[in-house]
Length: 441
Image (cartoon, rainbow, N blue to C red; front, side):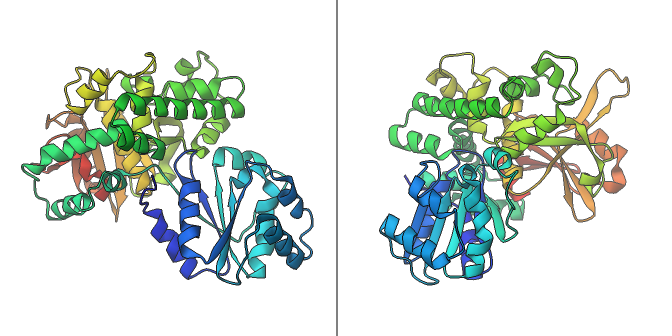
């Protein structure tokens, strides 16, 4: 199935003002980059040529050996593909461009020529490794494609208006009332299926969460294989596989030494950065001095790690089973699983914030007895104030960490928000919001 994606409109904006840049759609593997780009080329141009560099077509790849005559290049490209190109009405797509760096380097000359538009797709886990000996073109405009967000998921299930309805209630700061229960059920379904296009397609086709789980396991194995490529020692793989257990451990940071069973971790920074650039994981950094300008006060040594997709997170959390049985999915869907699901909702909030282009920061500080820590799960910078967020998987309105944080940094605080599973509610100065309001923050 072809899903409606918000990035399509941003691609249209690029096309309408284009002429001087190529467009690079980047993102993790299996988020739907190739499908989106081909649909765009099919509907927005008179003709297009798609070159899939993962197939290693030697005749086409040899054309990039000599670009001194672009007339010759385009003539042979049309001859080889059997597709006619039209001046300013055609696009050339470089799919999986990370597999053939010379094509990416050629972008500078092709864009300057001006006859056609150029769209590239690539997964950064490979792009980074394959650009050491080429000149990166400055004529690239980059857009990021994430897994389907909650609104796109609702569109896929046939609910076109539901998200607009939610935004209206958020803006008016009103409880949903009777609609809250159904909205939470839709959100939990999204958390279980996830936003990877293959997973969503499997759910819509078969309505079987066990089959969806199988697809998600294949994607996790694919990512795990990628991490083994960038780090054959297996450390990146172990760090990736340990994300759920690290979040359930209530530590104030990701404890790399416990994940890789090694005390010395001073050489791990480059590896963590490569994992982040793969876009399969998201990092939240500890803010050493929480104030506006969070990026200037972040600790590179203290971070938390999340999966790009909460559906994948749920499957990874139950990785010890051959498959995540439908009974577990059904209990999660009906909100009756006995385990504390706070870490699942925390991953969901992290995913929603990243899709909205927020960098992730958190803050911990010791309690009065210094035996435990208070923790604010996420910090947002809005105007000249901070907006602290605390995430709960239940309906409890207690928010001790949030209260103590706001007391400690009172002059820096704007709105204070508790994200939880119940309907909208105002508890003194704390705004208790249902977690499905997160995308509007």
